[in-house]
Structures are given as C-alpha cells and as structure tokens.
Image (tube, rainbow, N blue to C red; front, side, top):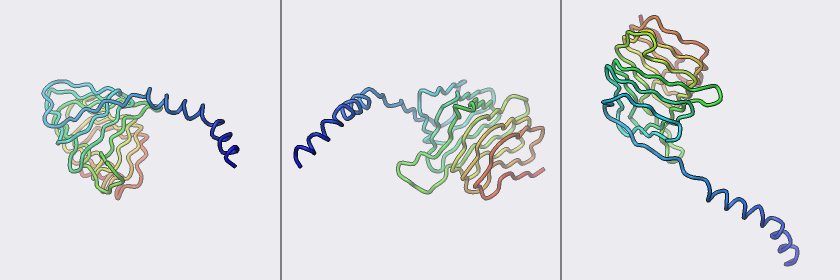
Length: 188
C-alpha cells in the first residue's frame, strides 16, 4: 500500500512543482484607491485595479478615460458622478471594462452606479463594451444629451439598468440589459 501511494505521489510531483513555480512567478495586479474630485484629465489603464473608496466626481473641463480590460471596483454607497465632464469607456468585445462592487466575500449590497449630469456635447459620454453590475442604478442621466451607450452588459442592478431624465439625442444601442428591476426608464 505504501509503495503504491509513493508511486502515485512521484507521478504527480512534476505537476506540483510546476504549479508552485507558476504561482510564484505570477505578480499581483497593482491596486489604486480613488475618489473625490478629479482635478486633471485622467487615464486608467488595464494594468491596475481601481477601487473607488469615495464618490468620484468628474467636473466640467475634466476627462476620465478608461482603457479596455480595466477593472473598476466600487465600495458600498459610492459611485461615479460625471458633472459636465467627459467620460470615455473604451472596452472591446474581447476585453470589456468591468464596473463591479468591491466585495470581499459574497456580500449582498449595491454600489450607487454612474450618474451623468449636464452634458451637451457629442462624444462627451461614450460607454462601450462595459460590464456594469450590482449597482442601484447602473447609468442615470439627468439633463445629459448626446450620450453614446453601446454594446454593454448591464445586469443584476437593484433598481434600473439605464435611467434617462430630461435627456435627448442619445444613442443606446446593442446593450444586453437583464436581471434589473427595470431595464430602461425614460422621463422626457
């Protein structure tokens, strides 16, 4: 019996060694905690995980651009407010941008979502190929015109996938909006 056990262990030893070496060679992805008012144009790259620890505000004249494949985790009760600024989320079919809650364990709370206010220029708000999950309202637009919201998965949000209030001239196309209480809400 001992001989059979030892023989089995010896067969799997190379795989065990390879697994240990592989795990040692993998580097953890850097984490950046962000929040507050952005005071300059900012680019988020996919080599960092961004954790929103306080309400993030993007004001007039400021741009936040997020590269494909970037992961954005948001703490409970926090979110992203675009207040006249520019917000460009450029995911791709193979490499989406992820907006998800910053759960430590399997918790059951929602983050606030992305709120967009006072937008009046084309190409000021572009959200494409993103996953927006477990927010209260995934995307809320108030007096925000010329939005481009395309090719996203907006899922498992507590109340609404996309809410438009007093907003017009927007392109909302080819999104999968499911498992939300309401998919799209429009108030003219």
